[in-house]
Length: 303
Image 1 (cartoon, rainbow, N blue to C red):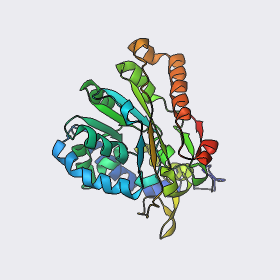
Image 2 (cartoon, rainbow, N blue to C red):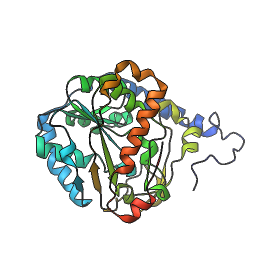
Image 3 (cartoon, helix red, strand yellow):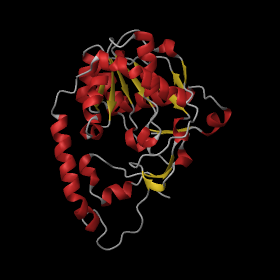
């Protein structure tokens, strides 16, 4: 199943029947999202973070998580951890770093993660995420967290990478996004590359469904994919339908910090510097040792 749009039929384009039918739904979600995003995102509560640890440990046991290179993580912030994103709707790649941070550093030292802003519109979930240190993903929140001296965890590939097809499970694909490079240059903080192997073995993504998102008019919500998966036990469904994640072995490799502070904040707007520093980060991901010879042979980077 391809990510490309099939031959359009009359009335089925973005302004067609499907988009019109979805308009009221999109309007309601957009209003809720706008209201929630005006609230103060910085509500991290060490007590809530501490209470999360047993669940993170259980999650990591299920996936047989192995973490390598923890010594490369600075003892304190600010720093920017940049990872590849996998696992579909139940992404399983942020939990290992969060678990290790709480175990090694405790719940009090601040660590924030940037998350898909639509998650903050969900009942209960949207109220809980800020308390455990998750922020709507945008440059303003990233800069504010770094300015406070915190570590920040970001997955530049977002939903584009998390919903790549099963056949591309061993690829790292940020979709050309370089926002993390700009923020690192602006703030002068080190970049910690984090390569995650095996996480995309847990779910069968058939297509990103970019053409479906366009036809449904979802781009107004910054939703550019409407993925379709092979759901266990329901068969072919949208990715939003709960599915059993397979217990794939997940290995997290944390690389040495990359220091771009000597470039100065003024270079954050220089396209050539952005491109070169992005290439540097790609090299760091390529050089991360793979847990298996097969993954090393097939893993490719496209950005």
